Amino acid sequence: FLSNPSGAQIWLAPIGQTPTDTTQTTPGTITNLPIGNYDYILKLTNYNNYVSSTPITIAKNQTAIVGPINLVPAEGCIYFNSSPSGARIFLSQTGQTLIDTGSNTPNIICGKPLGDYTYKLTLAGYEDATGTVTLVSGHGEIVTKTLRGLPILSDIIISPLNPSITVNTDQQFGATPLDQYGNPYPATVTWSSSNTYVGIIDPNAGIFSALHTGTSIITASSGSIIKTTTITVTPLVPVLHT
Image 1 (cartoon, rainbow, N blue to C red):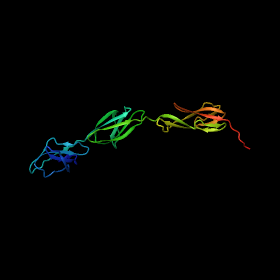
Image 2 (spheres, rainbow, N blue to C red; image 1 turned 30 degrees about the horizontal axis):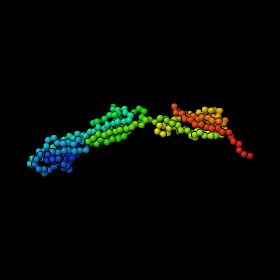
Image 3 (spheres, rainbow, N blue to C red; image 1 turned 135 degrees about the horizontal axis):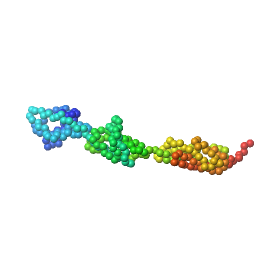
Image 4 (cartoon, rainbow, N blue to C red; image 1 turned 90 degrees about the vertical axis):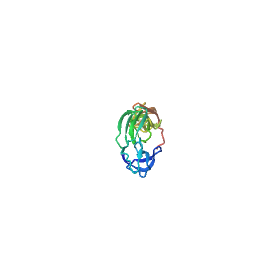
């Protein structure tokens, strides 16, 4: 038995019976066979099984030569789906540069040799979804991804909330911008005071200086995101000093 490529397992049985593993591989010779007709199968990983279409005839004191048989690489399909749909599909065998398939989700990519693949799904306004998938002989693979929107500023957490200070003192405010997933987001925050008679605030540093008693609404803003808190300024309480 000869095959291209070599190394295929040789399965053999008299015609009408199910071929069994001879434990030999191509190129290989099976000896001492009873005279008669035989069916055979050649099996090699990542290649389609080659099943004999006509039996081998074994005659007395003769050697039947089978092949060389060109084995066909096994191929499979990968179905890609995403939510939302319309994501561009990039695909390559693992370790190679990703290639634009020219297809968008949902779609099926066929004719791929068996093995490991790396993929990337891209859609404007969403983070890329990446992963790996293994094509195995006998069935296709399904890849389903829920795309995650790109982080955007969604909230500003002010601290402290609703503080109370006395006249002629300062209060440092802090702001933590967050994205829609609750993670810190890089954003510039601008501060303002609704009542500059009560006190003023540094628009960049967030330091409030109390001038007179009363209340003022402190605003932290960045783009369309606006958050507020209230500060109360109380009189300076005299204490025994000397």
